[in-house]
Image 1 (spheres, rainbow, N blue to C red):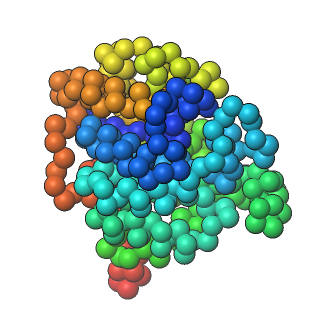
Image 2 (cartoon, rainbow, N blue to C red):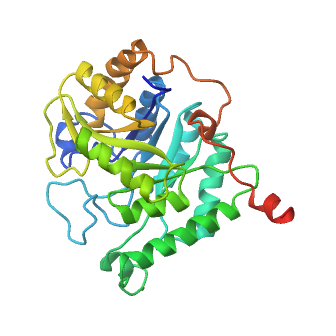
Length: 320
């Protein structure tokens, strides 16, 4: 491997397959703290860098107004979930999604700052826009004219949130990006970006597009949908993996050598796929020499990811 490998897991309901609930036996309700605490503890047992908690302003991941039968409906607030599991973990980074479009910056800043305090520096924030008419109607707002306006608003919102955080505490900011417009937003506003290549060729193309968008200092992570039992979602926006732990470890190592800073895995069925990642894939990566064998006590998420100390706007403005 070319450098230290970073590995995160994206959490979504019972898993990233729309009907993961059909493959999840005897699990606590997805709205319960017991379920999320158990999942977070499993991830921490695997020495993962962080987990992200997905969220949106719609009851299903498909982000449409109508409810699709067969899909899990109902999504707990991601920031509250992260706060719930923070006291029950010691090292795991916690990175919830929160929208910039219909959430005031001071509300986001307080929520993430509180998460950072109770987790002792392990907080992050995945910023997201909400671009649909029905989401806007929930807040009595007009339908946005174009996505460019929403990303301009998001840029301002992230800047405002960063300025509202205490000078000594700057949690990690991330963004999920599928096209150059979002790469530009990530380059302006984020510390790291999650991308969705399908293969080695598209990975190289996206890496070049991120650089062209001004993201030469961004950390770049690729998302991979993972199933070890053939529960495949062909609609996934991320690369889809189905196979053995050895094959997944080889894929992760290869993409790390192609210049990625890390990988974020999306378990198809969290109850069955996450334990395989933790108990079988991670040991393979450790034997390859690129993944930690223990956490370092007291390190913040920013330190673990090798991110530079965040700019202190207050000190900079006091000493121009």
